[in-house]
Image 1: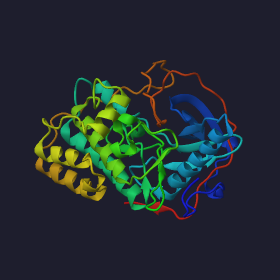
Image 2: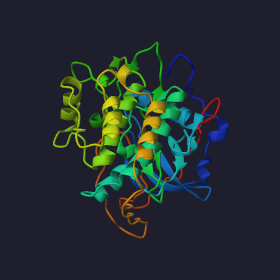
Image 3: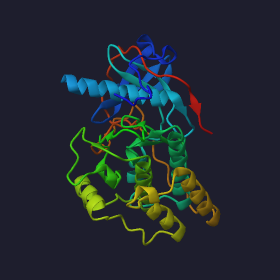
Image 4: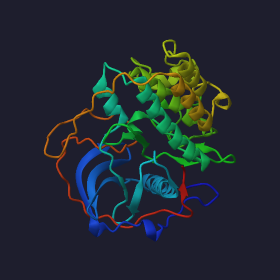
Length: 349
């Protein structure tokens, strides 16, 4: 699969191939519908190892292969300080993607740990800027993430920086072809990703990079309020309300400038939403108008392998890179070979 530009290929660029003999798979730290994430070692460096689940039917295997090719291609082509750093990948005997391991865990787990408290506003807006800068970089190279949500945003060990992870649903934007409605998590998804009936897997629909602006608005609302958006609704109920009734979380108690950013990003017409360059400028302007932070939120106690703490499960959706252990036993699956990437390499400042 892939666009007519030849952006993806079944061949892996040798410079990104990880040697399975140097790969050690340790404790599982996350799982989604398409993959499991482990903490591990590669050439004595601590890393996150994403092992792609095997498909059962020929159709599932084909989808898995194309998703893997897309993800590796995009990870290997674009670098940014707010994108999880790509290290390499293997294709045989199992499909593996290796990235840096961030010790702060997912933004979702961090926010949940602070409830009912909230983030300091400056810190929340700082996180939003990290996310917006990562998205600006992706969009500048024609990549739509399509699955922007707190589970796919990972914190550094000092809880001061957010990085975007999981390109499992990302794809190259094309103005000439329809794009598959492979869904992320409904609660954060843009309304144009639905049709008058719930989209079947594989159904195609027109949309563009502005789907990420909508998801960003929901994440920003969540960063400020530290509440689940569309609280009290299931994911499908939230999707229906947003798509067919134009329902959004309330922005009434947000500061005026922040309310303007949020409500402009989740407008029903994608063409009316700002791009991420504009979003960054709006956020920077807002930061310049508010005073220094009162309190830094309490740091979360790290959970190391010597501790047997079981953390709450992730909600359904694509997998995310998490750095907080879930108490799983160490698995040794050191077999994982070749890998993929391609073409030119971009660095976004």
